[in-house]
Length: 320
Image 1 (tube, rainbow, N blue to C red):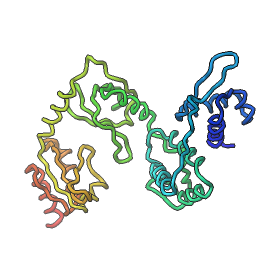
Image 2 (image 1 turned 90 degrees about the vertical axis):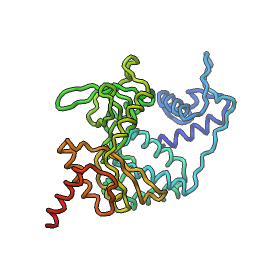
Image 3 (image 1 turned 90 degrees about the horizontal axis):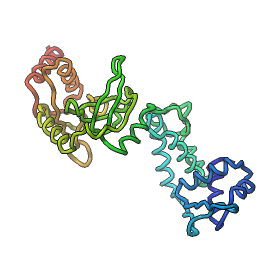
Image 4 (image 1 turned 180 degrees about the vertical axis):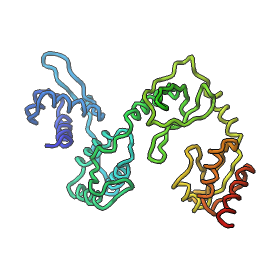
């Protein structure tokens, strides 16, 4: 008997009894004491109110004769859940082992006919990055960076963080206020406000070696942080309008520090506002190359003269 199936049966067994013991579970399901205890702890973690009774004749009971609710999914809900799980394969997402156990539990709750439907979907649907020769949803081959889950657990406690990163063969530390954790071009990044440099920065999670909460003495108030960010954003010198084809190009490639804001509900037009340091030759060259890559469905509403001049030079070389 599979673990998920056994746990579901044990849940129904104990829900129909005012009192039960570990020995009864062991005999009824022919399992060891350690397995019985693990199963009961897992059932309790799922939300079933189990109370341990102390004493020589102690055991367990379900609080207030709580009735275990029946969980039923419609065929479309099952497909939606399963396809969502399929779409996350090979994405280096956190909590991958939990995704595996969720899938096992879902399969344990549905009928054989519904299971056959999901097996068929798994055979015919291929998302980006899926190995067609091994499309197993329960495969744990796409584990994320080992620090990612610890990072998420830490930012759920507080947004003030002390990061340790390996950069050019040496370890560096940064005190930051976290703004976002995002995934871009198959990599995870931390978008944060550097409390020492007092500016926004992006840190690759792949370089992260440690993350802890920042001591209170080194903190800047949230109001001061966002005031400085607002003043920094005010130095915009490049404003672009995107049509649908330019948006498609943007999705294929864009510099990490830029993002677009959609200007209609259908996401067919968008606006981008950013700052380009024209005194930095590499940044200027990258931006010119990218603007040309976006194509003719792009309107430049505002730009530094240096960008316009570089673009004209590039176009004159292409069309002498």
